[in-house]
Length: 385
Ligand code: AMP
Image 1 (cartoon, protein in one colour):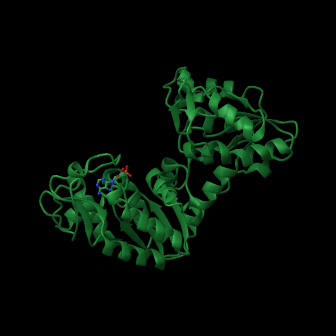
Image 2 (cartoon, protein in one colour; image 1 turned 30 degrees about the vertical axis):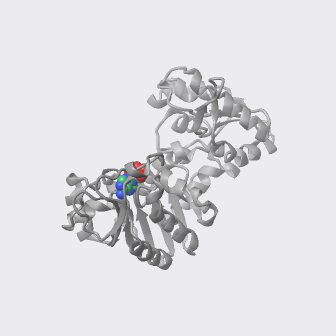
């Protein structure tokens, strides 16, 4: 995944026209006047170093991005105006192309659309890690024609993932959670070849427990994946599963928006790994938190992806917070990815205490599984200046 050109490889950019692919797909809401407002400008702020680097050296910059899901045609809700306004506050006015996903040629990787995008441009910079696993026109097209480079964010993401996967200090442990085992199986299989131990929590752990012959009550289990879990357990590396759980007692409900009455919510109980009939496990218990924290403390390299329970319901957030605290408190090189784990880390105010927070869920998973990304390959094959 290394060996791609970076900004310095573009040489003298003074007077050059640079086309920049950014990921400005920020969370949005509808404002009081019906117009789109950006609720979190993190993705805009994080492109500033790359844009400043180019502007400070006399280049002119045209930015392009996708925004929302406009399905290949113009949609007023997804025009880039609010992004353009925010970016202007940060770096001064910058030229914008229209939302690239207004054109069906973007997702189809249509060469005629690529030619439209690069018209009049001298150089191309990709600073959109989160879409670099997609062979879309704006990601893989311009490097076919223009000398190209990775921006600072893409460079950092790829460097961190490379350090994690290619030269991890050992022990290297992965912590994997979340509800759906089916979504995480291929991640688990590729991690199994790289790490010394996998810590499994969250809803997906109950399918492992089922494979081991434990009862799972009303907890989420994917019966079609018990065999795959048995194979992983047999093939190694060490897989650590919860040793106690916090469960909803019969009649209770998960409360993801924390607005049910106490009666509707029902009661919780700390139980062992055998979940009784009618109970629904929703978090790791106190003994598991200690057990996982000990493992985390012994690691030199950590990858964490996915919550340890239904953490949106504050009654079941404790296990995920405990893991966030252990990862933040240990001295290992630590990478946290996946929307939910990043959110839990931010909620606990711990995002500065880990080595790297990955912004691109899908892209980082593809890097782990395949070792490279179409966007990086395209940069490597770009014409030299
Ligand atoms: P995923 O999308 O598969 O990464 O899963 C993330 C979601 O899993 C979050 O919304 C969590 O609330 C949910 N989750 C994790 N563990 C459990 C559990 N034990 N029971 C129900 N939901 C869970």
